[in-house]
Image (cartoon, rainbow, N blue to C red; front, side, top):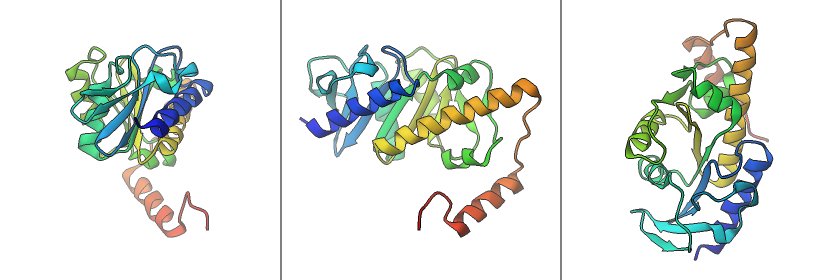
Length: 212
């Protein structure tokens, strides 16, 4: 069931590992197809994830196909699909993002590309992995955003497909690395609301991020 989606989830997980955004069995990836979700299995090594290590559940969380249990963060993934209408989700433990999640309550807009993720990156309060509390806190942090950090834990991104999710995960880690480096030499300069609005206006006028 959902053979193509399972293959794509596995390929995305392996790419995340190759990019250094996940290690070992940390993190999870999923994609939605109609009323079903293909999600990486609990504890699977993402760098070597195979399609048979991706399971299928319905939007209520009932397992439909696959021999392994789904990721412990299944509740969070399903919440993202229900609340935001996303089509793909990735949760990573990338180093820079996780480091900032241990120290900040929000990553301010220090670079205009943060606006591609919705603005300042919120950090959801800490809660035990896989818990309803973590899912609710993270969903709140994602309101109006396509990325968030999870305190003392990691990061999450969602989007319209797995390719978009991969790019957002890479962008988020780049932005977090940028902030860490800026903070190491001084107090990072934050873009004002007026400056952010000017970026949005310029991007709309010039078609920023799109080829012609």
